[in-house]
Structures are given as C-alpha cells and as structure tokens.
Image (tube, rainbow, N blue to C red; front, side, top):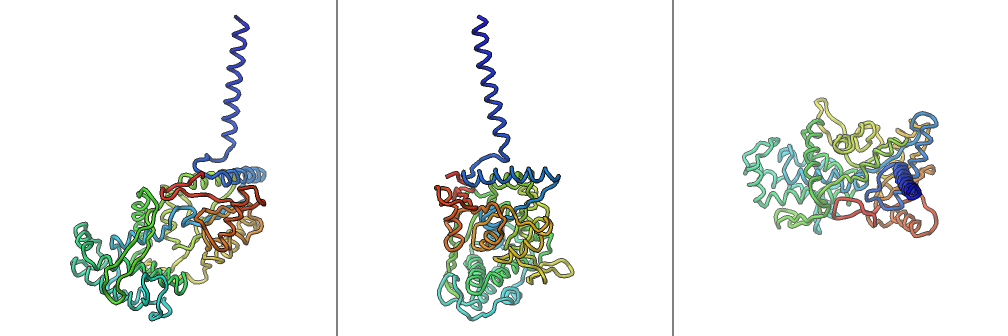
Length: 406
C-alpha cells in the first residue's frame, strides 16, 4: 500500500513540477500572445528580454521604440475617422463666407484639374463654389447660426437635403484632390480648416467624441460616398475609411515595452492635437504628451487653431520622421537609434531603413507595394526560411478590428 501511495505521490509531484515549469515559462514571456503572428511575437519578446537586462544593468531604460500611429498603432486613420464623423454630423464652425479663405489659402493653383477628386475635369475652384453654396443653403434651411451645434431634429432634417451629401463628398474630394495633385502638406490644411474657430481644448473634446463613435463600430471597412449630380463639379464619388480600433495586442505591446526597459514614442503625420486626444487618453494608451510628435499647428492669442504649421518645427512626415527622431529623442538616449520601429506605409519607409542600430522593424501588413513592399517581402522571406531579416510582418483580421495569427 505504501508503494502505491509512493508512486501516486511521485506522479502528483511530477505533474505539479511540470505545471509550475509551464507557468514559469509563460511568465517569462513579456506579454500575452493574443492574435500576434508568430514571427513578430517571437521577435518582440526576444527584444524585450534583451532590453530589460540592459535596463536592469544600469538601473534605468536605455532603449526606446518609435511607432507610426495611423494604421500601425491603431487600425485606420484617426484623423480621417474624425473627419468623416465631423462632416457627417456637420460639427464645423466656419461661415459660408469664410469657405474660400479657409480652404483656398494653401492651394497652389485653384484652376488646375485635380487628381483623385472623384471625376474628371474637377478643379479646386469648382469644389469650393459647391461647398460654399451647399453649406449656405443648409444653414439657412436649419435656421442656425454657424458655430451653433445642431439639434438632433435639425441634423435629421438636413440629412434629407441633397446639399448635405454634396457638401460631405466635395469637402472630402477637395482634401484628396489637393493631396494627390500637390502634396500632403497642402492637403492637410483642408483638415485643419475643419477645426476653424475651435480652441485646442474644444478640439480635444471634439476628437474624443468622434473617436468614441468610430471605435464603437464593429468592423473596419471602406464605404462609398456619392454626391448628387449638382453644382459646378457635378457628381463625385469618394471612398471613405469607416471605423477605428486599438487592438488588445497593440495596447499590451505598449505596456510591455515600457515595463521591459523600452520607452515608447509616436511619430505621426496626422495633426498632433488629434493624435494626442486619443493616444494620451487613459481609456486607450494613456501616453504623456511628451511622447507624441506629429504635425503641430500654430494657435492665435486666444488659443484658436490656425491652419499654419508651427515655425521652426520638423514635420514628422516621410524623411522628416527620421530627422525629428534624431533631433528630439535620440539625444535623450545618448545618441542611440530606436531599437524597434513600427510602421505600415511609404510615409514610414525612411525611419524603417535609416537607423542602422534598429533591431526590429515591425510592419503592419496591408499588402504594400513599392519600396515599403520590398521590406514586407523581406519579412515574408524570413518567415519561410529565407535570408535573415530585421523586419517582421503582422497580419490584420480585416474587416474585424483585430490582428490575425495567420
């Protein structure tokens, strides 16, 4: 009897030892797997273990990571998500008379035919005329002063008007057309114009409201906005991103990096105040504003948002991201390069390739082509046993707002 009891006790102890070992092994992983693809998960865990040891050796964090925001940290573009919500709910404060000054000021040529405006032969001047007329007609019908928040009944009535759909589509077409015909630097001022007459605290509240609605959607997708055949520009069609999400995986990664010796920074080509409104909110990432660098706009003496970029400020856009990181963050870490960089698009290509000491380049998979697509292919080759690569590829579970292990 004692023999069998001894065998039973031994087996029980072995099971307990194995369970403890499994638990210990799980604990050595810096973050839960969740829906991370295998290659990025393994690379990130390895990186965090290395950097934790380096931080422990000197008693403070000596490494840092840099992430793009739109379509990298979050799924979709926060700026465009807020823009579509803002236009759909007519949450703007300019008057019809102010439309030309607000939207035309930074467009190099009002009569040049625009690319990607939703139809052939469309110019900025045509779009501006339609936007002004649509807005004037809607405000007169609502009996509202510009700047007033429309009631639910007023908004419901305006949504039945052809001018409502025309207004939305043509503001979006103006933004897309200016971006693709001239440059994002000019196109971005169209977005900034939508914040005319807002103070920065009011802008923060506005963005939080728009983000909450977009995050509440159950999927990430593109929708079609189509204008009626009216006005100088006629019928236009635009593809609009819909929905916004912060995955559990990315939220856990930000927390795990900081806990394992790697400080985290965001460098974005969106408006800084818009990114901060979400990224610095404890409901999402809770970052300090000192960790967010994006397009910084001027403000007037009363705190109102202006459409002019802040002077003597490096715009973290394309190669400007690399310049800004080297100027503002690298000196805080004795000139070190970031150990981890995350991005998704050509706007991130420069920072993903210009730091020789970067250990991991995390690319969010969107089927990229061009130079950024070459980095994606390097990551895929490494996964299938090809040449080693610093780059790893994380898949998305579109249209569901989550990552995918596959």
